Amino acid sequence: MSFLLPSSVTQANAVQLERDGLLSLTTSGLIDCSGLNDFDSTVLTVLISWQKNLQARGLNLEMTGAPEKLRVLAGVYGVSALLGLS
Image (tube, rainbow, N blue to C red; front, side):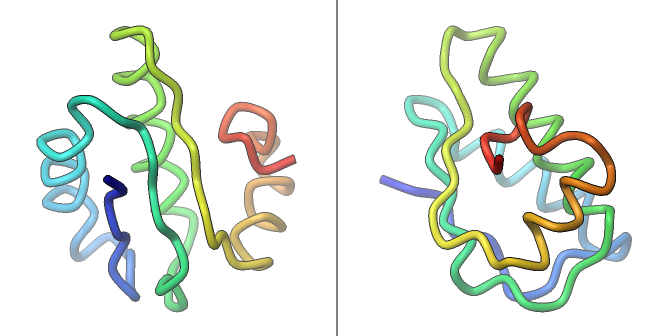
């Protein structure tokens, strides 16, 4: 089962989203990004946090439906490979 990202990820909801994701990503690192359309670099912080937590448990973050803007943003920040967006 995948964790669905909300349509908006900004500083206003990042901390709660990170917590919610950690609670949901207990057996799978699958993230559905298909509804994501309003975000800034804050989303990368949340994704990296999840990736670090998952790796510590022997799992990997996997994203589906990542919008092109997210791929570009991850590339600009140099975290595409880390997040599996390359």
